Length: 231
Image (cartoon, rainbow, N blue to C red; front, top):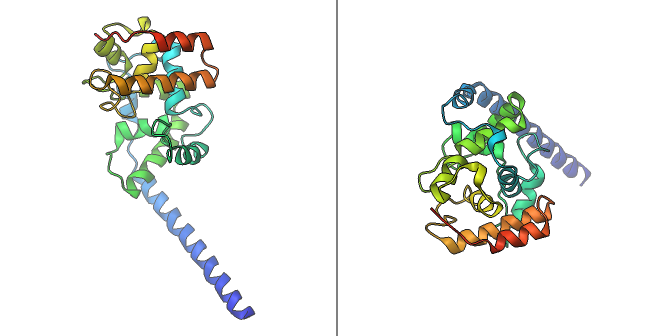
């Protein structure tokens, strides 16, 4: 019996070691095939690019609150967020997703949306590389300029004009929260196509901002009561 147990543990150890070696080889091979980050630098030089300082604080806080509340704490991959989102999504379709803002930047600039293990590996490795090459504000800035927000709008400056007919500087808290709800599902959460669902998403984001201490209860109540005025 002891010999059988010993053999079992040896096989288990060999399996673990073999798996670790294969994973290491896969990571090293993928690392050599990663694209240059020059595309990010080039994009930041485009004429309509908006610096992070021109985005309203309430808008950036709304985006971080719903898309990646631990953005300033993780190194590109939020393992705590992955576990929490997995549990929350079992019962709440409005909950935060597991992809970090950095991972979304990597995907939007360099990768397809194919759900394969290879693409996911590239996404993780690119996220680590982006985090080491850029500051958090620079990464958030790229995200805010690049993300698709429905109705043909790319980036939040474009979306502010598309949905509300106004520049970023004139967005209200309610409008900022509604725009922040678009990245996850630009069609389903679109206030033009589905105002009821957009309102639900907006209310959820405002509540998250309240829970995180980003807005007061008075601001929360006022934003909920603000009429929706689309362009």
